[in-house]
Image (tube, rainbow, N blue to C red; front, side, top):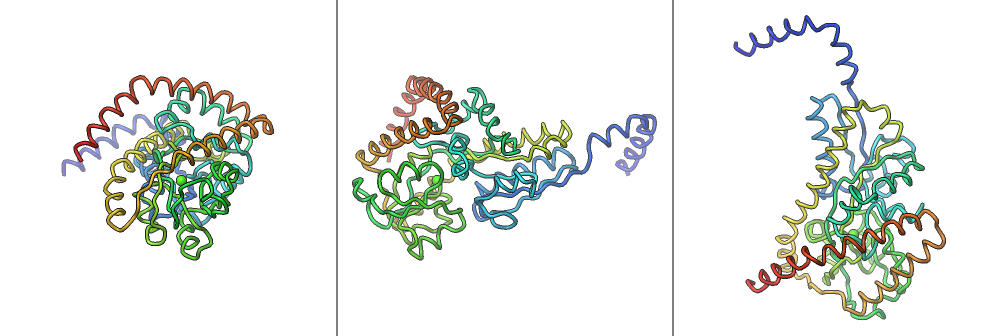
Length: 363
Ligand code: CA
């Protein structure tokens, strides 16, 4: 009864403001978007980030702005999200930009490049190091504006049927690996395969590939790779802090009321925190279960790490020589990386090394 009385008086109160109401209605139109994710629904963290964005946008606009999230392959194949957003097939997409290095290798910087930044450093480069503006120049040519919208943190190196001890063991290895890292490994004789998340397990099971990397224990457990390939290597040196991005079609973005734009941008920033927090909280319990299932945890040898590092640097120089856009971004990125690494060596790394060593001794 009290509620009814309140509503009645609220309605009466509004009658006096009738002149202003059309403007309010105009600024809060009903908008329905479709979002194409590159990821399968079963991966509730990497796929879930898009749902976090959609839910926040809906709640903050009183249901006026709704984004329907589709899993990879539902309306758009997992690795074609960029094309779909560029062409306006969907208004937006959630994906990893390094899937599109075939169009331009510069896309890799929007996710991660091998031996590049960790998650904290990627955010620093994007938000305060000029990275976002630089990458938006590239995306503009593809009719897209993009937002950082998730990060997995440092990844694992993946699942290998056979042990990988020396660079000899890499020769001829058919390895599912995301992004620019495939080009680095090609220099060492690996045959890289780019396969969307939902399609990796069958390829590994059939023997089309010898090894596969995805993200880390929490996702990898769900995808079931441990049932086929027991050797679980680390670290994923190609993904120290890979970022996921929300792509928005430029025309759709420009047609969006300013208040909705602000909400969408904030929702992406929320997803950018939510995702690595969820992975960090869930990876260790998942790793324990994987080891109990027989996974053999193995670090990449120093020989392999050093050879891959040298191959990566050579590739960057070659790519910069051939692609002016890559060169422009790489030359802006490098001094930022050097500086942020120097800073991390002072306090962050000293703190981490000490505390992690103490924690290891506790068992
Ligand atoms: Ca990966």
